[in-house]
Picture (tube, rainbow, N blue to C red):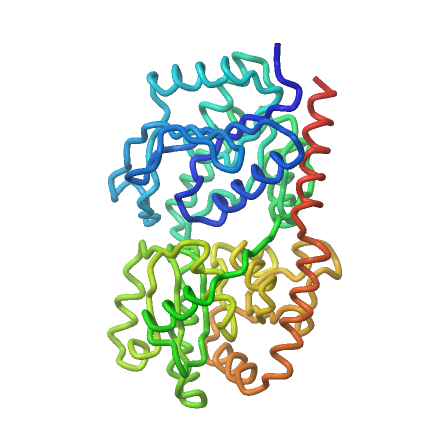
Length: 404
């Protein structure tokens, strides 16, 4: 007998792994528990010291043994938490977990990682309805690799994973348009990301300023792992121009580095003295940085701006009242949610000098920058509250379960 208020969440990425989707999945699970749902997470055990099983904030978390991929197989996305879990021993583990908890629905996050295979397989065996959230789609800047990705997506992932879902949850209009275009006639639901930032303690702020030498600096923050789809090249090249007008400006980049580009660019002395690569930080530390940075800047370079979404990091920066600069589609979350120069600043990619001018203008105009940040914070409160996101997600669950 299934538990009518139990969901089994499959996600390769879950804390202590730090990524946008892992933070988002954790947030949703926490909110579901508040709504009296039993929540079971099946993830990959890729961080040394993380528990194979634990209960955190009421969420049952199972981490499966994972075989780390060799660097050459990550195709430039050399994150330390990419691995393989799809093997017979783990299938048996998942069977035991499902038998114990008896969920009424499965919620898969992302379709291109191997836990998607396990989720689809288990749904076929147990006849669970499956909901899929697509956080990002399969793309690569290399035309050759991108062509291979497209074939894998269309010939394999489309039929075995995506179209097995009873509903695909899309966090924005760009993902929804992509889903409908590439995967055909499939049920979709637009449910934006939930955004919540805890208040960082003063001691954490002091420590970060000391650690990275930020006292007296104008801090341009850029949060997100550096990989081929988010390489920050424009930002690095813009910094020498920014320094001419704002000599105490510094670019602080937070995230794991999996590409050689930063090292190559930082051979330039002007770039080197203006850029700090902070590496991966805990979410609480990122919250602290957002509390005193001046601007947050970054964007994905996987597609044209009109097909590009804001990342979770940018939304969190807006929640903190920061002005965010991005090369993205202002209609990402529907008409009127984002307005250029009102609650966000939209720029064109591949124009570092123009970007430097925008950054310099904002750093010199405190009133304008703070006004945009205040509007940004109100936008997050009005459109991205966790209460609303959780309710919309539960509406999807209910609809799918009732159809079954």
